[in-house]
Image (cartoon, rainbow, N blue to C red):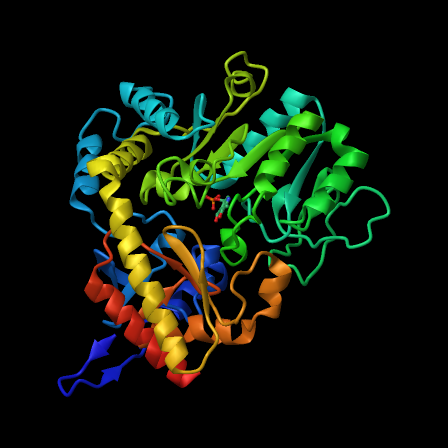
Length: 446
Ligand SMILES: Cc1ncc(COP(=O)(O)O)c(C=O)c1O
């Protein structure tokens, strides 16, 4: 946000719009990344420091997008940057993962020491790939074709895991329905992309039990976000994950947690350590690399060792590439330091934001709920004390939600699409107070 000397604020994105016009001639939609198009108005950025971002028009923002999750350390953390520079100086600077180094082992050892399910670790570059590999491992292990996923859980953009809507009255197996209503609707899938993918409402144990009674013997894997960050920061209902764990054991199904967001963000052990339920496989990405592309599958030895025997192939030229491994090692070392000082700082800033937002809403007579795990939350305009499902989320005041997040940039704070607040270790009290002022001004406008 540019401020003039008399203290009035002015915001314009003239230069960003010009760049958008130029971009649109060579880049579909004028954007390099799907998520770039999720900002309410085109913005191009020039530089960043700590928890602040500047766009090409000179507007300064408090950054609560944090690259959509990876940026747990904020921008330009000196120790992180130093680790990357040192890696670039080695002979492996341009290498792929084919040039193995000792740091690969060090990183896998670190992940195994923190993450309860991680007896073995395999590196990938993106979360989508990690999910792809986890599904293949589970199918090979169980020799079953189907998997179960849940409404509004996001597991990447590959054909069989993306979008669809729940079939409320399935005649047979509960396969997803293609629908333009789905946020992740896409044309261009293979026609039978959903043939082996059940889609169920989450946090509803009865639906899962009924489904498994009929089809459990055909199901290789249940994959879910253990805390539904992609659908409003919903926590699992008390006992839900524990019962899912029991059902998986009963039916011989591989339980997978998608920790691409929660991994290393809610704590070094991920949501599985925080919630005390250990899956068989888990997928990681985003915060693991602290800003560099990096992902991993971790899990039980007997499932993961199918990769060792060559029974399952998980390829990828850049999987385990040296710069990403160095970035991840640096990130984990920073997160481990002083018995989790970074997490304590994130907790403090998150609490300050939460209290401030609830105070502002109360003062303005707006019902408000702040929910989500450590490091990422939603401000929802509802008087419910907690939201457990996508259905409830839809009933909460969504239009205000969208107006709120899309107006916030003009008031100096960037939120992720839909109103998701990602906290980084770089956030200061002054940043929090700026973000709260942005929220107050935004609520006055909408
Ligand atoms: C829970 C979850 N799983 C998987 C993915 C896919 O990761 P990527 O975008 O790195 O392919 C995402 C991305 O947002 C995610 O949120």
